[in-house]
Structure formats: structure tokens, C-alpha cells
Image (cartoon, rainbow, N blue to C red):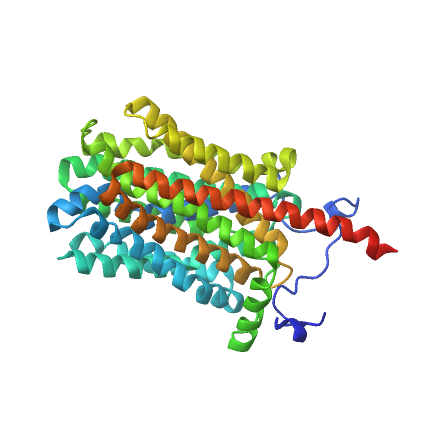
Amino acid sequence: MSPASTGASTTVDAVPPLPSSDSPAASASDTRLTPGGPGYRRMSFALFLAGVATFALLYSTQALLPLISGEFGVAASEASWTVAAATGGLALFVLPMSALSERFGRRTVMTASLAVAVTVGMLVPFAPSIGALVVLRAVQGAALAGLPASATAYLAEEVRPKALVTAIGLFVAGNSVGGMSGRVITGWVAQEWGWRVSVGVIGVLAVGCAVAFRLLLPAPQHFRAGSLRPRVLLGTVRDHLSDPLLRRLYAIGALFMTVFGGVYTVIGYRLTEAPFGLPQGIVGSIFLVYLVGTVSASTAGRLVGRLGRRGALYLAGGTTAAGLLLSLAPSLPLVLLGLVLITAGFFAGHAVASSAVSKTATHGRAQASALYQSAYYIGSSAGSTVGATAFHANGWTGTVGVGLLAVLGVVSITVLGSRAARVAARREPVAAH
């Protein structure tokens, strides 16, 4: 099919053909990065730091919601908008930002996005009202939109295919470290000096990560500038949305993030209330379980190698559901174990689904990744608001109920994918005759 018939620009993803990674000539002529090769560690560490900055900023208020509720006199459902506005802003702007990355380059857009986001981050501590805080957080989320889709597109272009799942897993691991450190730091700092100082500290941390990212990330070698014409962009988006596999992956990303967003938006309220009554610093330290996500995301490649993509998704969904059920217990150790399982399942499922998107897209990879990220962060916004509303109405049981419905959606979609694969496999021999 020609580029014109697909709506894709002839210059988008126009990387010259490279030898198969299985051929003897691959190591000599394929200049893409590979583990152990020159530039791979710098690239991995740079994108790891970008992931740290992105998630630390994006969720900087999540562990502080009880304090924000107290200062502004608002309920959990209203305070949760400081999280939902940031993730919603990212969801809305990730596709336009991906188009800019096709024209101006992945590294350029990622650098500009981080620069704007950290600048806004230094203004957040001075928000005079809940409304102003929500607006600033929405702007910050929109600025961060240039990171996720551009990063995965950069990796798809600059890393050899066999190393792609592992490379994306490391980027997702950076997300988990950023989410963890942001929440742990804000929890302890807020306990002593209040939520405003704590989000300021996160802003300073993000500045350091942004500077190191720009200094370390290798210049792209396989990027080819694409078109900014709306017709080309819309055609590429239409192609991706017409692909059944991509649609399923987008829905899976959204549903996994619905669980995660709901649980971690509400968990602070649950742990500060009876029967636990934990102080803010201890509640922030609960987010150390993100380290489990760092491990599960970075090992997603091996998981897919052993179980296949759908098998890995079944395991991730089952692990998440088990964690949700355990978290219902009125026992702090069991709640913590539940959070460990939820976190491990979520990050593994996210790494598997996002890397599958990059492998499935044959053109317009930035747009394919952007659509996934948009669905993913819409899920985060939905999880934050619906999870908080369910908590307000029915307590933690309500939040867990929302999460279990989302996991059921993941499993159902994966079952449909398995059936579609079997039907396609039966048709292939017939087509051969």
C-alpha cells in the first residue's frame, strides 16, 4: 500500500532498510543501539532520568491530597483534580506534541517539554487557591506531553528491535522511580514544612534530571523529519485507530492506569484515617513499593519471551486483581502486600502493552505511541476522579470495586485478542491454497 493510500507522509519513519538482526551482517551494518554497545548506557540513563522527572512532577500532589484538602477545605473528590488535571492535560496534548516531534525531532521536543514543565513546577508552590493549583497542574501536564510519545518513538528508531522491550522497560522503570521518589520525598518534607515546600523540592529535583537528560541523550541517528500537515496527521491517526490490535492495546493501557490512578489517589486518605491513622511521612513512604514496579517493568521483556504477550498480560491482570482483593483486609501488612501486587502487575502490563504498540506500528510511530499515552492518561484521570468519588460514597471497598471492573476489562480484551489470533491462524493455511 502506498503512503498516499494510508495517509502517511513519505518522510515519516523513512529509515533506510537495515539487515535483519538475525543475519551475520547485522552487527556490522546496523548502527542502531544495542545493550553493551556504545551509547546504549547513556541513552538508557538519560531516558531513565526523563521518566523520573516526568512522573515525579506529574504525581507530585498525589501523596499530599489530605493536606491540600485540609488547607483549602475541599473533599477528596475535589482535591483529586490536582492529579486528574495534570494527567488530563497530558492526555489532550500528547498527540499534538507527537506531531511536533515528527517534524522537529524527538530530542528537541523532549527537551522543550521538560524545560516548560520544570518552570511551571517552580510556580506550583505559590498557588493561592485550589482553582489556581488545578490550572497550573493542567498546564504542567500539557507540557509533559512531549515526553512519553517522543521517548518511545526515539527508542523504536534508535534501538535494535530485539532490545526494544527491554529499553522501553527501563524507561517505564524510570517512571516508577520518579513516582516513588516524588511521593516519598513529598510525604516526609510535607510532614515538617507543609505541602508547598514539598512540591518545590520536587521541582528542584526535576530541574536536575532535565539538565542531565539533555547532556546525556545521544543525538538521533535514524530520525527523518515528517510533515506537520493536518491531513497527514489525521490519516496516520486513522490508520492506527483502524488497527484492531492497536485499539486493544490502547484500551488495555487505559484500564490498567484506571486501577493504578484510583488506588494511589485514594490510598493516602485510607491510611491517614482509622483504623490505621498513619502520619503523612509514613504514608509517603508507602510509595516505596514503586521499587517493585521498577523491577517488574524492567523484566517485562523476559516475561514476554517466556509467556508471550497475551500470557504476560493475563499474569499482570491476575496479579493486579489479587492485590486489590488483599488490600481490603483491615491489616496494614496485608494492605501493603496488596499494594506490592497491584504495583507489580500494573507496571508489567504497561511495559508489555506500550512496547507492543511500538512494534505493531509500521509508520507514524510517534502518533501510535501518542494514542497509547493519551488513552493511558485518560485512564489515569478517570481512575483518580472515579476512584475518589467511589471512596467518598463507599469507602475503600468502592475504590477496589472500580479497580476490579477495570481488570476484568483487561482480561476480556486479552481473551478477544487470543480468539482473533486463533481465527487469523486458521485462515492463513486456507489463504495459502
